[in-house]
Length: 267
Image (tube, rainbow, N blue to C red; front, top):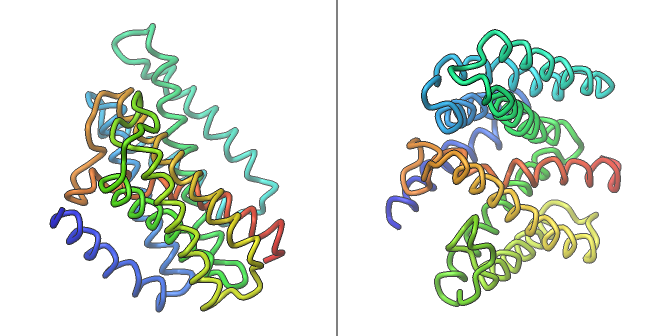
């Protein structure tokens, strides 16, 4: 527990000043660095016997999808994703692995890494470029991490009914409720401090819906870890199971909050 808290505080000590004082460029660089580290963790899970070539390929394709989403006209995004998919198929054709029967599995693993990690991460720099961009970024982090924190403590104190034991044996319905409650409270704090244009109904809906989505993001990464037969995604954040474990909820919350900000609030 102490290790978990210390690792989290060190992460916040790096993250918060960068977001507050670094501007758009700092967010791009920080998220880009985290993206590379997470792709390396993913490669270590999905391709333990072929880690470094797989990391290089995932950084190339996942980084390409990320850069296309952030820096190109949105009309090009579909073409970028198509190019990443086509290139990955070509990569596996020439490097199918020792068992040809598993080539399709290898292709799927590469595409999950490139499109899930590379593509979903792009939401944070895209949010930063909107009106009130810094507030939207902080809201993503607050929803993801308050939900995790509330779920952890509520689950430990009150947890009785398992949420999805096949994928995550420790998660409970009580923990989910506690996480959503803390998430809603966090959204209301952000609304009061920096985003008064959010209505009460919108704040509640964002807290509840995105709190649930954050849990699905966590479950998705847990499912992949079990599928790949690993316990932790990496070693970079002791007590947290790896960096990818820390941002799995962010990867799901970010794109949906971006859609809300653009389509509903016209940011």
